[in-house]
Length: 266
Image (cartoon, rainbow, N blue to C red; front, side, top):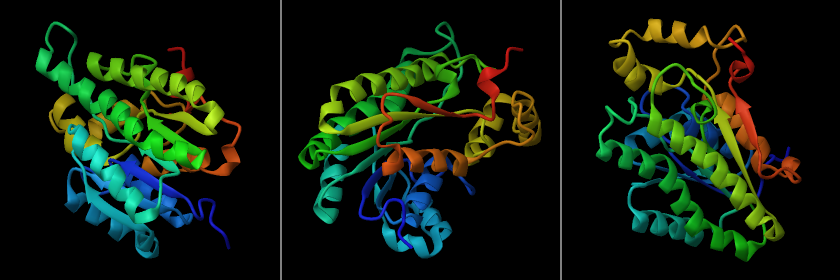
């Protein structure tokens, strides 16, 4: 049985995860590989990518892993070219890497603000900068950028740089979608809500509730109309649709994966 991404080549950032479980990038890399894509999976930590390969099972044969520091433009350019040399091109670019820092403009340092811009927004700019020429050669492509509901609404804590940069990712994607539409390169955004990913246990609980994971999960679940919390597999399935030819007439828009949180009025 043919996979939905047979014959396609996908470059994914943040394809590891900060801990055990289903992060957005890890789940996306595995789901794409299961559907027949050749996946070039990158992350700053190769050990995290090893865990991705273990979870992929038989689909691991379709995944090539590589270390990538998205703060370095030269590293991004070289990683893109390595993928092209290995597989012959790039059909799908998925930008997952990112993270939040707490605080508003008064308490946040300028250094933290700059790092957030580089981490969440400039990284998207740079991967697109170097991947787009390869897609133009093939006269097709799908770019999927991960944003956050923090970029569209208040989500329970002050994280001004994260919110601003994720809003920037959404608008960046819209402009890019129109600019490259004539080349049949589609650009869309996944907007995850408050998912149960490894980030909750390893980072957010320590930052916000003194390490009490169960308390943080309860707080996050209270904002979600559905009676359960999604994880990276839910965003991966949305990304799969946008990467596949099933979404051939969809560009410049977003899929919100938040269990209904964004439409609540309380």
